[in-house]
Length: 426
Image (tube, rainbow, N blue to C red; front, side, top):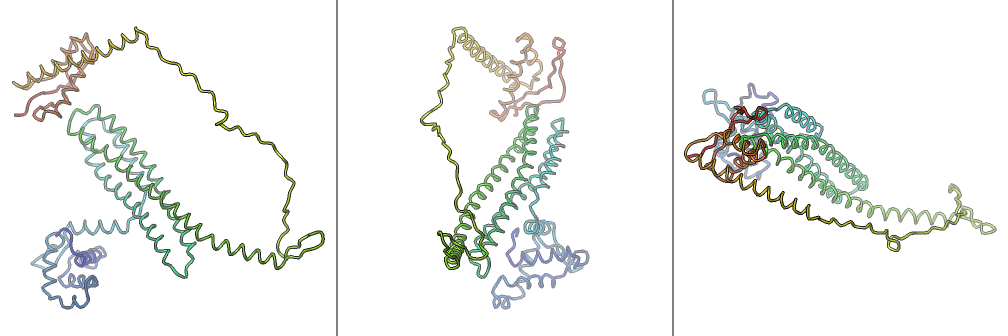
């Protein structure tokens, strides 16, 4: 069973920690140790029901655990933990004990970017994805999950404060508000690390234009989809924080109002009972209350308000763009030229694919023939090459394979092409 019941799962965790602490020599333990671990997790079931369990019940649990968690040595009559048990317990331990560390993510992102910048060929980019990115991806996701769990814990603390008695609720809520500010600061730090991921995304986009292998191009596309997913999760965390903090401040205000009103009322009673009215309507305040100057001479200023709705700014004149007949003819000629070029591209592709139905063909002769017919221009030939590659997505049997063999033509010494083999899969 991949997911053990709670009692068996807690027993496996106890055995895992004992193995880590060196309680068992060479990580080997006996059946009695498993029984003790199961007994220590008996609180998960009814006490009376536990003592009514027959001994065969433990044997059944141990037998089930031997599928993925336990390995039995019949000669020494001892058990060891399988690799799945180590991974299972380590993941649980990391989830419960690990701390959120945005600085670690930023260091990893810097290292990823530096290694990607050194990749010059397609295979190096593919190795970077398999070796470094896939190792980083779960770490990044786990850090975002830990940040979200910290917010959930803060929300639970807020709810718990409403049930506290004989405790200063204001102090607890202030602490929680500071904790939320800390989480927001960590979220900002995580976003600074995310800037490096944007740089990685830009580098991958630049390398994608020169990648000819369809499989590697698909891998790059999957990597580039990961970064918007993380950004979306961070935006959700921001929204949750924005919804929590105004409610906290409103709660603070509600709690502070009664206390403030009581203090004001006591102070006013103290003033009324302790003050003395002297001659010329002079009021002598109680001892300890400083005299305040209640009235000061205030200069008069005349303020003229310029209301924008009464004095709107003058609208800027719009200069209409008048298209001349010559400009119109140029636009029509340009559009017609593009249509003619696409028509010729489709004709060349049909001819190439027709030739490839009989036997595999190489693309370089066609490429230089198109360049020659275009008076040395490569726009038409490049469009035919890209259209052929895109055509493989529509036709499953069509195969276009690029090699590292560079082809030159004597008429065009400054122009070279990686050879491409075109064929149909039988």
